[in-house]
Length: 283
Image (cartoon, rainbow, N blue to C red; front, side):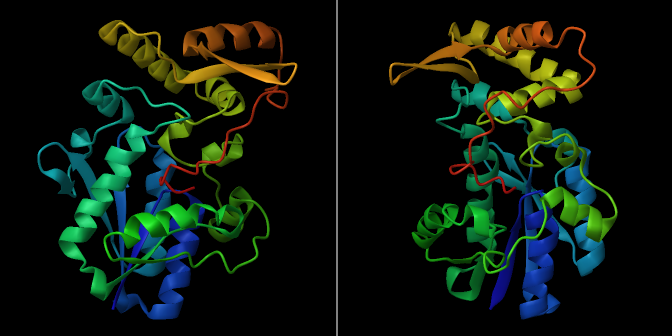
């Protein structure tokens, strides 16, 4: 039986999960794979390198490619980013839909795994932790339709400390996204499911990355003649919640006015990032 680990790029799925699976099943019975996309923080690949160093095994890198579904070990210049998907599909991601994760991660991983790992000879392992066990129902259902068994080896462990603290203790360094309070280590701190607090952190700590996504949002709106936005403004009055589009430019203007003259990043009063129940990126 082959044990295949799906690495997401965060500390749990990239370091803790491989070590746990290898300890139980032996390094010779374990393979590891990661779906690659442009726009990730360099710390994702630093963690992948740490994983390879600690386990002595190479992580297989696959990336989306039209018509062929995926490429193995393709050069980074060929990697797609999330906006490539949005423009191809004519649909921008939002808190309700994530075509980016579906195309660049879920579908590409499924195609690769089905081509190389027969379901009756393979057990899949994902980096779900005990505080996000509710995600396993959908993951097991999705893979179960293709005959695969999926295990979440970290859910039977009590978590002591944050991912940032555990990473610092084990590796001696912390991914920068964790340092500035991001809830995950994917997409350079950006996410179509991010709340206002995470977008504000991205704007404060990585203004150039924020500006890239702001420009892409405007280009998408112009190209498809739409008012679609990544973010929404939500307000509740007399028990009724209303939701209106909020562009990244409007949000930047709002936050820059609020932060004028401040010497520290105030995020506490903003809406936090919702749980990524439908995104299989891996925290």
